[in-house]
Amino acid sequence: MSELPPGRTRDADREWAFETVPSVSRTFTLTIDLLAEPMATWTCAGYLLCRAADTIEDESSIPPRRRAELLETLDAAMDPDDPTEVAEFADAAEAERPADAGADWETVDEVERTMRLYRSFDEPVRDTMRSVVREMATGMADVLRRHADHGGLRLKTVDELEEYCWYVAGTVGELFTGLRAHRESDADRPDPEDARAFAMLLQQVNVAKDVRADWAEENNVYLPGEWLAEEGLDHEDVADPEAAPGVARVVERVVDRASGYADGARRYLRSIPRDDAGALPAMGLPYLLALGTIRELRNRTLDAVEQPDAVKLSRSEVEALFSEVSGGITQGEVDHLAAAVQSGPYEG
Image 1 (spheres, one colour):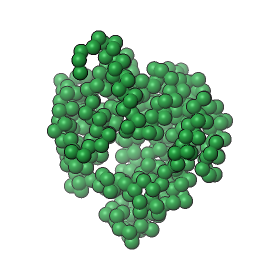
Image 2 (cartoon, rainbow, N blue to C red):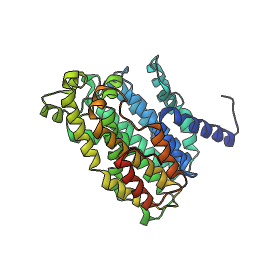
Image 3 (cartoon, rainbow, N blue to C red):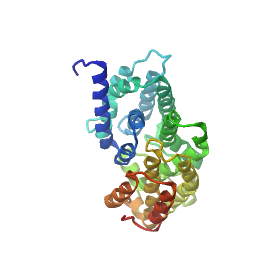
Image 4 (cartoon, helix red, strand yellow):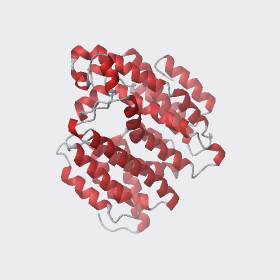
């Protein structure tokens, strides 16, 4: 890239960041689209740093211990007291880059660009992002080392499921909550347990709906081994057609656990003022999508076990919900939409 004046460099990096997010997460793109500035740019950059860590954690072609080392290098590069440069992480990751790397790998390939955008923010904003990315990277590294001998993750207990969901989703929720804190009064801040519930709802829904894809594409099984054992199964039975009904019953338990976080997630949303930089529609949308996905999972649990990506909301329902929230939304309207989504596919 040719040298640009600082202001133009930031603009170019910001433009790249907003162009990149849609290729790695359609849902998070919708969230960012609903945010006002500067929250939109802050959240976009923070998400891309988290996604770089997540891409490394998910890459099954790289041995788990090596993935852990890469994540620890990223953590060191984010540490202001460590001499490690982000270029060292980028170079080390490039040496491990799979030949068939997907779109997510752009977040790793261009991590120096994201870091440049991150460094353009005020120090309090950087502090928030830094703490989140470092917690995610080190937490993921710890989980990978624990499961290194399996080649992929095989979570043993419900507590381990909760821990994993925190590192991959709770930290991103913490990012958003922390960024909000730079724009709001103390009275508006959510209860940390409600913020955690919001993240747990979203991520445990993902675990349930992606059970087959996670095994087939990443060699990961997030269903708790203790629940599988109660069905007379183990992690490897996720791929056995004859075991599908038993695996589906475990998935139903994950869905039930996710549903148990819905009330706390709703309280989290109530902590968001309507005029807070688009935060209520931005957070309300994934909440509604999670409720809709729970509805689909309850009707089609076996499909989630037998076919990758079988259970998800239709594009028309997602677009209808986005249309409802994009012009702004009240707390009462969130409740109305939640009830509608839970009763059946929302058509507007």
